[in-house]
Structure formats: C-alpha cells, structure tokens
Amino acid sequence: MTDEKVKVLLCEDDENLGMLLREYLITKGYDADLQPDGESGYKAFTRNKYDLCVLDVMMPKKDGFALAADIRTTNTEVPIIFLTAKSMKEDILQGFKLGADDYLSKPFSMEELLYRIESILRRVKGKKAKEVINYNLGGFSFDAQKQLLSFGGVVKKLTTKESELLNLLAANANNILERNFALKTIWVDDNYFNARSMDVYITKLRKLLKLDPNVAIINIHGKGYKLITPQSMEEKA
Image (cartoon, rainbow, N blue to C red; front, side):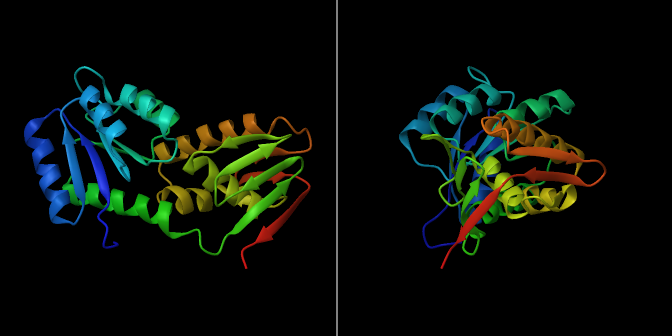
C-alpha cells in the first residue's frame, strides 16, 4: 500500500455491521467512508474520489444494484464489490452485468472481505507495467493501457474487466486462451459465479467487435476462447 490511503466507499444499512467493517478497514490502513443507504452513497460518490466501492444490495431508498448502475454512468472503472444475503444465481449475475468485480454473500468474515479488496486492487493497479500497450486488431485499435477501443474514428472507453479480458485475448490472438487461465488471471478464482461473469464480458466484447467481420471471438469447446484477427502490436520500451 502506498503512503496515500486507498479510499473506500462502504454502503451498508445495517448500522452495527457497517461500523464494524468501517473500523476494521481503517485499522488496516484504508480510508473508509460509511453511508447508510444508496441515495447518500451516490451523493458521497459524486463529491469524492473513491478507489473502490463496497455496496450492500438490500438498502433503503436506493438498492445496491441501482446505486452501481448510477455509479457506472459516471465511472466505468472503479471496482465494485457487492455484499448480500441473497444467494440466487440470477441476482449474482445481475450484479456482474452491472460491472461488479466481486460478490460476497453474508455472513462473511472481515478477513475475507479484506482479501477480496486487496486482490482487486492488485489486479487493477499492479500488473500493467510490461504489457503490450497497443494492438491493431483488424480495423480496431486497442490501447490496453488507456482502455480505449477505436474503430473508424469512434473511440469506446472499456471497463477494467473488458479491457483486461480483451488484453488477454489479444495477447493470445489466433491461439487458444484457456478458460481457467483467464479466470485465474483476471478473477483470481475459477468458481461458478466468476465463470458466468466472464461469459457476460465475452458477450459484451463480441458485440463491440462485430463492426469488423474479420475479427471474432470463437468458443473452443472444452478449452476456452480464440480471438480471430489480423493483428499487430506495439510493446512498451
């Protein structure tokens, strides 16, 4: 952790749990801002710069999913972790479709939450130094560092997850990207929910790449995915 504290937006309507989590994160060196509902959470988000959001799903005034959707309209990159007592797969998939980075079901240990936070921050901040930064994928130009995908003069800002997944696919272009390798590289764990989350992002990338008929992501049954593309790349010096 750097000298500048990581700022976390924590939205939890259970006052006791919220205070416990806030105090725990503070003792671990984080700057944690606790808000009791989705409306106050969004107001806080618009006033401050946060490095990560931890959102309870079931909150008054505005639930965690609605709050995440609002956050994503203004910031596609900030990592989001959902906290919920729900265990329905549909709810978890809804969270991932909104751009969640992780999902923690109650009850959970504070140590587990800390592990998830640290894991996400390592992925977001710590692994871009030696990567290829520019790919030419057919008619597309992909700047992996800035998370920008360009086609015909139109530039699309990708989310962190979209960019990380496209980066892996592009680095293995015209070769098989193994499913488990991608899951463990980006999501750390290859469990069911993370696998379904990756499926959602693969679908998103396919829609973006449809503009060039020479570029496609195909399934390799039982193995993973292959990005089919005429490509070139530029590496960092």
